[in-house]
Image 1 (tube, rainbow, N blue to C red):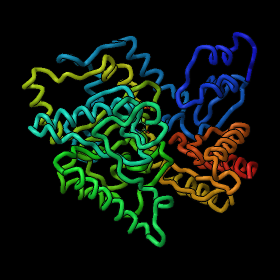
Image 2 (cartoon, rainbow, N blue to C red; image 1 turned 180 degrees about the vertical axis):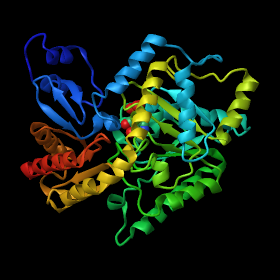
Image 3 (spheres, rainbow, N blue to C red; image 1 turned 30 degrees about the vertical axis):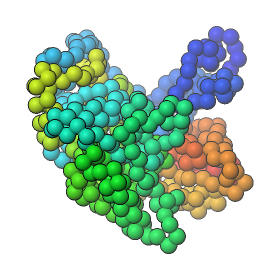
Image 4 (cartoon, protein in one colour; image 1 turned 120 degrees about the horizontal axis):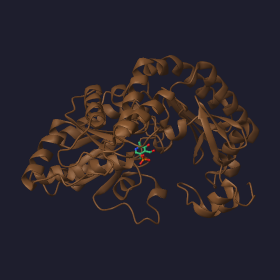
Length: 447
Ligand code: PLP
């Protein structure tokens, strides 16, 4: 690390606590300082360029340095840099974005509600669900089911939904009323001789058993990502959603599709909900909504959710929830321009066009002796690494491959020993090949 006093590196170590980082290790290693970005590339403060194979954090759909987003932000900053949406107030960008999202939704949705992060969107979804149960005179219908390996955020409630050990351990989570059903990862969870379809059936049976054991009248909602992202890029096994959804319907359980990663083209359709033929009551959206140029997230809720919530707010005299920056006009203006770009450039069609090359190169890594599974859809994928020599120390291989990628100019994300690939949607076919040339070389180097 750069030890020069007063360097950015030294000041970072001196003053900043980092997310998802071993703080003591950071004191020794220091940070990677990213200074600028253009298209699918970012550059560090030594001038070294990297392919950003994660689009930041599954986020920058239109790539870095998109001037139209900068200009949209500047225009809105000049006109109205801030206003809120509390107590009957509104402004143009929030109205336009709400209308746009409700109209874009692939299933009937009534209203959009704005928040600032994926975590807040899911947290708000939980609050809406509880509020609704109370409004309907069902105060016991409060339990929420999510999945092992699902990722839904880090607030106290959304981290509780998240089904990953490190989001619970030492935080005293999960909170009460949050339950986890089995991980849908076929390779690690299947029984001997079980087909993918049979495994999906067993996941559905396990969900139904959990509902019955807890009492169906106590279960309010089920949260799931169409494709699990941060939990290791886990695709639903064949027949999974077809079998899960009828169970939710049978017991009158709301379905929340967490589209924070899948939303806006990632899986080759505008929403993961379309890719897997889902019928959610609530969709949570963020990340590619604004390409993360500014923080903004949203929930779309259908009439089944909105109706009782609206009645309850009327009974109480207010819907006692809201963030200072809910529907922030500059963030909303950037999101609108971002969605315009996604539509004008047909980035969803582009994902479909380049996905075969992306998946071919990804799947070819499966031949490598260090790779136990490659999996992906659209423009999201992962390779899971394993080797006898390090099988008792998870994360070692991922760390080594990650370091090799960085050295070779590629930023992936090691989720334990799973290397994720989720590049900007604007990536060209040539760039897909460039990305996997490095991905392959990095694995070869570590082997
Ligand atoms: N939901 C999903 C599916 C996510 O992938 C994430 C973040 O990666 C979140 C929720 C939380 O979003 P945020 O980090 O903006 O709070």
